[in-house]
Image 1 (tube, rainbow, N blue to C red):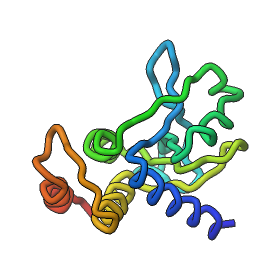
Image 2: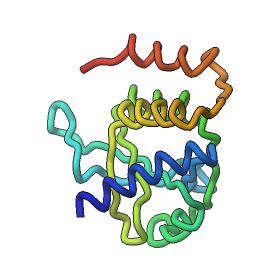
Image 3: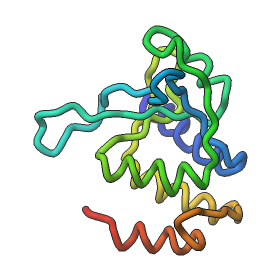
Length: 152
């Protein structure tokens, strides 16, 4: 099962870099994205549950999760550059984990936002995709920021 989740994670990475689009489910009224609590991560003080924002590489997979508490949510597209520079960095600062390609039974791979961002940067370089950012002058600039602000 773990290998299937890891395969799904790497499929997500390759697919979102290729299409330059990440999908989420967004609550129409509050604008919150689909979220749940982590099964894999614990807070540093082990007192609080760790939050997970869920993302997909395909619109149909996101649609398959529009049920139960996410039934009223709509599928929304996030441009890859925005996802990398805003979403991943904000989730990292807020200690929120990324849920990747959750299945219709709401189970999927979880990754720290910083590790997800690093993996996306690597794949962008492999695929030689050109991205434009709002807050960074280039992919190298974003890479340097991540390196300088990384806390282990």
